[in-house]
Length: 94
Image 1 (cartoon, one colour):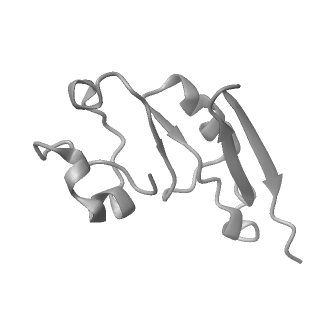
Image 2 (cartoon, one colour):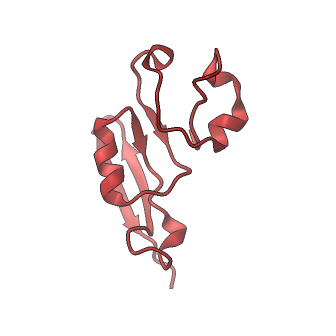
């Protein structure tokens, strides 16, 4: 999803707006039934994105549009679920 889930709700999958826009780094494992969340929306460095694989939330947004604002950002990132591998390319806009 783009944003995340609001675990204060009985059914966190019921609110589309939250799934698009919320920024929540805490996961209720009872409500996710042990599954990881894969989210964007909040830019993180490629290192933080890579490290997130061992957490409950895999963070994919590596700030592609922020290449010239922050030297830690500026990448488009995807995650191959079966191989558990990231694929990243640097923003090529000049």
